[in-house]
Image 1: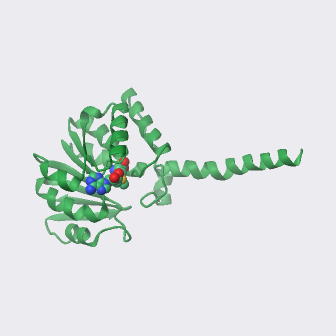
Image 2 (image 1 turned 90 degrees about the vertical axis):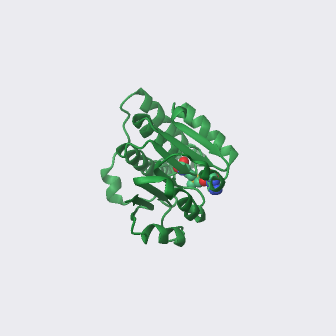
Image 3 (image 1 turned 90 degrees about the horizontal axis):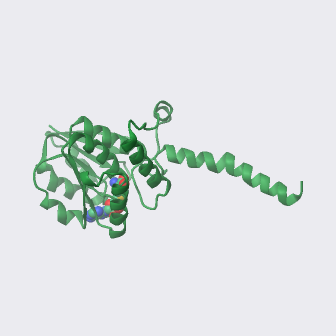
Length: 232
Ligand SMILES: C[S@@+](CC[C@H](N)C(=O)[O-])C[C@H]1O[C@@H](n2cnc3c(N)ncnc32)[C@H](O)[C@@H]1O
């Protein structure tokens, strides 16, 4: 074997044994390894990937996989998306409000649940490019009828929401969570839930944490970087 061939073989072996497992692991963790992407090894060992029950779901899951594999912008990890779906359908939510659409990854998880409950998602994105990509992704997943995307600054737009909300998902500007909470809490129904992403000691806004943990009318737990708050 010439030196060049041997170098080539070594590079291929290193790629297969080092790079591929890292990529597969990142994909299992939801397509990114950043904050909120790290999992308890025990959870990872026991959990299995999502299974499609029909052709519609199979297509939507393939769009989610595509987004995760071609990630240009931040999205929640897969296990958080699945949790959002479970909560939404279990609550029989009719109106979910999401702050921070990005390219629509979490929106598709919500959409899958809302297709079953007959509900709708209103989701806000300030960035025009991401909003456009999200619209395309919602269409490809067949979930555009369930989703209204509002492009603009959510701080200025959420005041226009009419009717009650069942679930609020905060995943936009972290320092803005307290303003979203103040604007939207009065519209959240009793028994409704606020879920907030990137709730860890480094990123959580103290004012928001105070608001959700010191109000006797709210019950809050934090798990794996996500706060879950019940309006009692
Ligand atoms: C972490 S990403 C959201 C990820 C998305 N929930 C998902 O999982 O696919 C946060 C998004 O919030 C958007 N954002 C930040 N500030 C905003 C604001 N004031 N109004 C609306 N969107 C905002 C950002 O442009 C960014 O795309």
